[in-house]
Image (cartoon, rainbow, N blue to C red; front, side, top):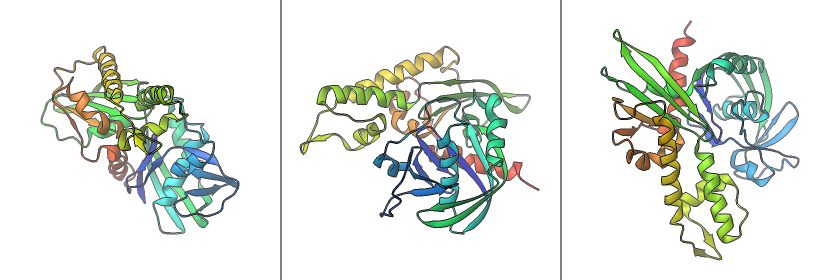
Length: 304
């Protein structure tokens, strides 16, 4: 099976539609409860995704996450969840932030290939994952292939948890070429930390950065009463303004022919970004855009 795996800093997504938070905690109990995502790999037991919130979870916060334990735990879990079979062969395309791609792609590719045949358990069910081929592609560059072009320049903005990847493509001699790129350490985790810090200070709580998503989506209730959180919109607006200032140092946002937005963060921030770049637009299925295009790229790269 050819599969795209977008192992983001906040969410792991696959081209098969699997998605879960990229957080992991060690699990010693392994009692099976409905809705828990439990895996055992090489004798070590983990809670993964939302289930990891039950323990002392970790997530990668370093741009170089190749050697972080969570990386392979999340990738292997995503593969196991993507098949009903007990044994599945996989040809994997995954990604890296565009600025880390040149330095880390071969190390990550080899790390994935070294897994070979992996025996693991997924919620008590034995699974064998065999990785036969692997490749790595720059994240925002993958989204470019989902864009319909007609000769104009394309500036892709891919907003993830830890990074914002920006790639500029221009038509040169009839072919599109990547002419400029940049990775900014200004992903949505930075925004979430600001929101949660403000909430914890004002309401004497002990929420974590990843709890911000739920607060933005569902509001905050204390003793059964919904709290007024008008300051969240102000924090988002300020965060986007700072991000746009960073982008303007390297890219001309006004003259870009198309400005497609991808990544889970783009769904939250689209309207705020359009205040600065009116012709920016959200690509279809933005959160899965990288994973889906990785799989399409894999069909070409793994063709035999």
